[in-house]
Image: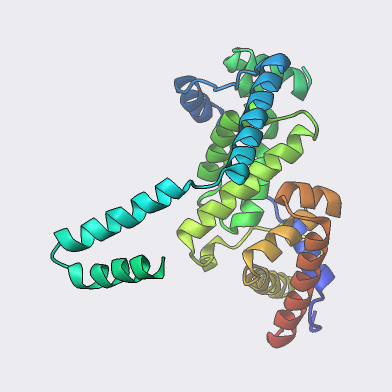
Length: 108
Length: 180
């Protein structure tokens, strides 16, 4: 008894430890359970799941192809510069924008 | 009625049969809760929570593992949440009651044994929660490492590491205590 216990002794002690009181939670659990409906997930038929997956795949592929093949037109770039130029003259903080717009203009 | 049949019946709307599942597993769940919590105060409350959680989780049961494994997994999750909420040490007066091992011991020897077991329990309760859970499951019901991994939802390698570290830390704690 004077020796230090071993780890195996500690594990055996954990194994021996039991809850010695009788447990009866059935009524309390059933009262709570009967109040809440059980949400069983509805399974969609296989053909529906495949249709949705295929549609998503087609849309994603089309979007990706469109994104990588399209180029901005020259007119749209001009429109941006025009907007910046007009904005620089029509607002209070025109100094910086004016410089930006002019720099863009002369670098053309 | 087998576990699987009972679950199927409950899922089909015969909720009253759920009482049979509770009756069948409540003592073993309470026992595991007690080992994991380390005190008797919360056992009934936590056991109740486990069965309420199990009920809502039943639709997710895939019948690929044993129902007991699924129940133990929920128990471990509920107890971990509870312990995180409480974060309190195990009160001295609530240390586990152990079955009498030394029938032939004198009164003095029994006292010494009791103190020794209480000290060991204090060491066990000082382990990190994950390490303690792994070690409790290892000592409980002779679970294999694979089953412990399933219950704790971690890899087999992690279970091995947790048990190895738990043993190592326990050894250090035992070494550092003064034993009579």
